[in-house]
Image (cartoon, rainbow, N blue to C red; front, side, top):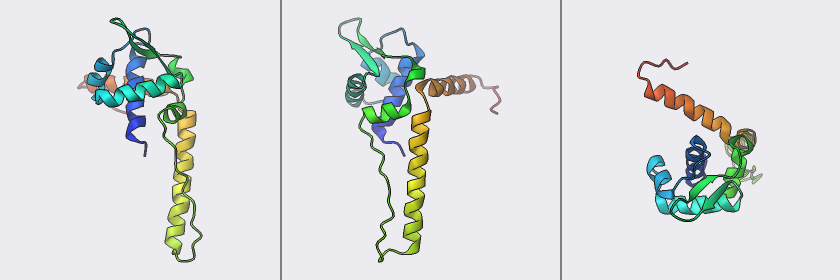
Length: 145
């Protein structure tokens, strides 16, 4: 339900969150997260304009988080890269059947749930989930609960 650009932004931010004191090059992030470098450049520029990442030019330059991961909510990320959640509205067109109206209302409910989740979830929460999955996937004997 999230656009590709938002998913790329989240992957890039998760990469930065793994070593927040370090600046990361576009090529390193692109390679590690399997994101096309040209698209990543655009996404990082949008994130910088939104104040979510900082950039430094030069040989030792790169991108880093502009604030702590716990201060970044996913709604900010989606807004930064231009994702606008479309609000489905019942058409109230008498030519539509009742099933179309029911499904339009369902879409509204799903969009409200997504918007609420994006508002309430921080990058830090995603990062903690990432660490858990890394531990599980790196340990062949790990039990997943």
